[in-house]
Image (cartoon, rainbow, N blue to C red; front, side, top):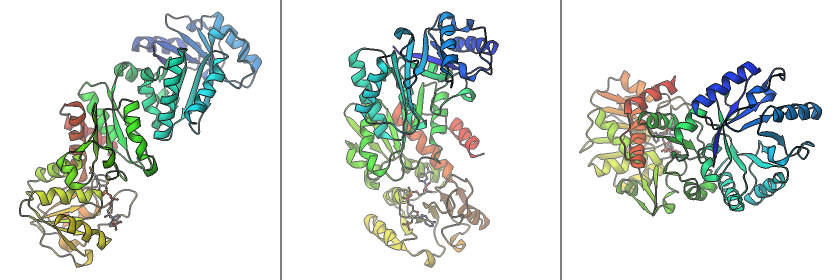
Length: 473
Ligand code: NAP
């Protein structure tokens, strides 16, 4: 059984006792005291006596000081002392009281190497190995090693470190880890990806896990929005980031299965290349040839395109009806493709303008639309949609089209949500367009639709919007 273990990072014995009481009140099932955080090692070790297992961890240069401190901790009631595998002290204490640990802060080795490391540590006590996770390959290696170790039937602790390893902590119980190390408060977290004890208790042993894959995932607002929606819906759930390079995409289905991930959003650059891994795709996703949401079902993976639902809801929010409308879509990437698929299906007359004209022509041909050159663009559109990153934070701060195309009759939509106000929207508003909508609505609506696909519940959009605004500050 996995125990949620609160890591107590205190400066002195009094504070350690206060933190211990707080951790137990929050529901901690074990306590690790980081003695190396103390300014001075105290005489009073009474905090080690508890009704739950306690661990003394002390990284120090001096073996003599460590030995004496560990002896005192055990005498005071500590159940375990944590000693690194490369320490000369690892074999001098009774094995039943030793957690023999190994940390690799750079990488995760292959599964067989993880098992070799664990088997070596095992000779001195309970083996604990923590690896820096960078992507799906590492998550699979940790899971596969855990499967074999569970079969051997002896206790072990396996941790995937870093934000990318968070799912190993959410699924610590599945992995079979003896302890799930948790921070007492977010401020006291000693490692990225570590859960707080409040969250770990709230999640229980079987939280709903959803997330996002793509590359890079540094700028995404989706985790904030989804995690706020989980809390508001009182669902013990967490949305995690699983970055994957194109050559790693084929590993994502295995990660979804092995970590029982309910569903995942798919973003750049995988929205099209994920399709061969799916059992079926909904009609909107099929017509767009792009999927941004996957549902992990018992019979395989189902693909959806909630970006399109977000576009539809954004236009509806400003009473823009695409039927028979003259619509300009700027861009010819995945997002533009979704917009064109939706708009042509709704009966709009669609023109496409793109920096690389040949891509606009190809997209236009596929959907029976019209390609136009950016420099030739004139007014006459009733709906104009920017589906390029021009004006997005980290990209050129420009509008991708000339200002002359905006008129008082038209409605404009920018898919960019960071920043909410782009040069494109500013130019449109200056021209006095009938309505302008930022990418925020699309973001919230595509997230809300994905949330419903995964949980069957309509999330609280106001909470999602508020979270977006806090994140934008
Ligand atoms: P993509 O597949 O990479 O396509 C990008 C498109 O933008 C291409 O047509 C590209 O033209 C064009 N482009 C890139 N940089 C440009 C620049 N500096 N000036 C003019 N055109 C430029 O990306 P995507 O997935 O379609 O996403 C496009 C935008 O939509 C992004 O800003 C993304 O954040 C946003 N988006 C928002 C949401 C939301 O929920 N709000 C959802 C999905 C996407 P070339 O063909 O010449 O390279």
